[in-house]
Image 1 (cartoon, rainbow, N blue to C red):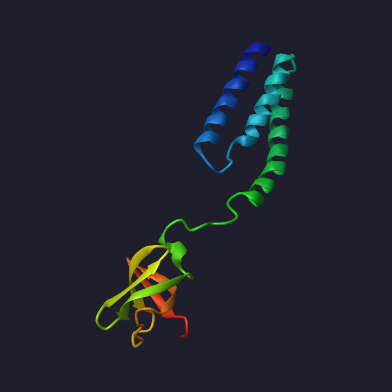
Image 2 (tube, helix red, strand yellow):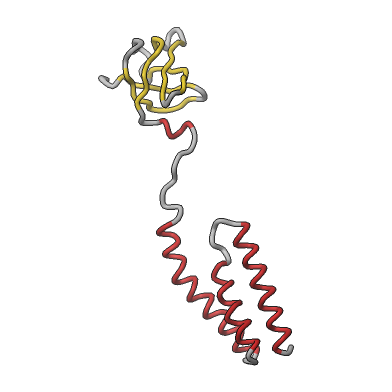
Length: 148
């Protein structure tokens, strides 16, 4: 293939890598973008195809070796709960007596009202007390009295 056609091929591969990267959040093809760019420039100035392919591979591997560790350090290193699971460990205010035998009890946490049960079956918790959320079971918070 002549140089102009290889420029188009490298740019098409670059475009594919950009689209794949845009559709994922895993950094699966960002390194190939740089490799394609270098190979396209080489094709434009008339460097032989074998050298283009070698440069593509070397640049892609180098960029992967540099960017991947940095990306792993800065991305996905903290999983933040964004739903009810984020309530575990927080304090709640008992607004209706908690009695597991009767299946009753309500608390408020972060401005929301929840059904609640004591983590200990024999323990009843009176309205007005402050509790710690230990777990979530369906739509009920499992709580413990702070004094416990």
